[in-house]
Length: 147
Image (cartoon, rainbow, N blue to C red; front, side):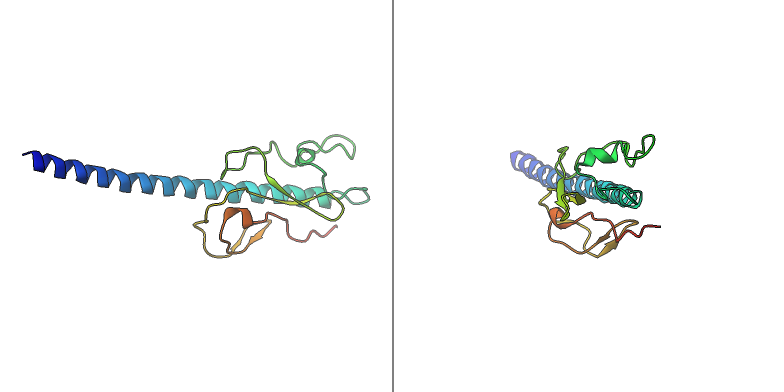
């Protein structure tokens, strides 16, 4: 009887670890999708900021907060409602890619895990290659043409 109870307990522990691993994978997949969405939104906001910069001294914001409230022209223009935290780390800070002029050219996550997405991905504002870790995805907008 005792052996049967131990075998049952071992089987329950093994199945619980499988369930926990699948749950962790699913949570990471959801955070990965959030990273793609947020990174694409930031890249789109950077592209819109650059497009609206015709004749302006700065075609790129110096800080991400400038995307929340752009006062370069008459009135206020908002490219983002808020700067969401990096879903892979849970931290509010994003890695920032600086252009030669010191402005922000793009952002990246500080996440070190390997993405589930293993094929190149074209989003509405960004083209992402296959990478070994989330930090290697660079959310820089495609070339912006001023109209």
